[in-house]
Image (cartoon, rainbow, N blue to C red):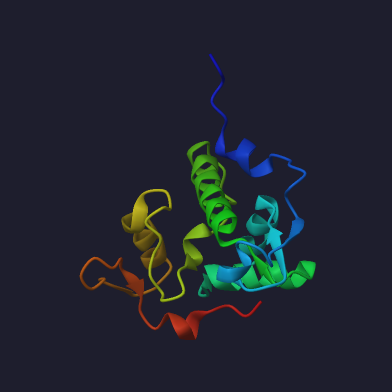
Amino acid sequence: MKKQVSWREKLERKSPNYGKIVDASHNKGKRLGPGKLLIPNPLDIDTLIRKIPKGKLITVSQIREHLAKDTGANTSCPLVTGIFIRIVGETAEEDLSIGKKDITPYWRVIKEDGSLNPKFPGGVEHQASLLKKEGYKIELGKGKKPPRVKDFGNLLYKL
């Protein structure tokens, strides 16, 4: 039987594809635009999220844009970036469960419309509770939309 891989191991896993820039002009180029597409490194995402101070937020798009700009790519892969942001969150919760205090504040990452991420550990309820502890105001989503941070535009961190 295989040993279960921890979230920390997933975060720190090495791959020759991490940090790789690929040509996006075919297939994905139609959706993401032409040019170079970055396959990000999960540790780079973790480092970036750790820079977000209490009282500030960042969107997934800001993360993608910053990673791409730093590497000379036009954009960062949205699918891989999203997966790695979740791994960052799961790793933070795993670290917290074993007594670590200095964890990555993944809950400060929101979607472009200010909504919370249902794929984060504990779903939007847990993210909302962590944000409320830091003083953020959370609005209920309309219809099937998830809750969102009130006046989030004024709280975005400039990278």
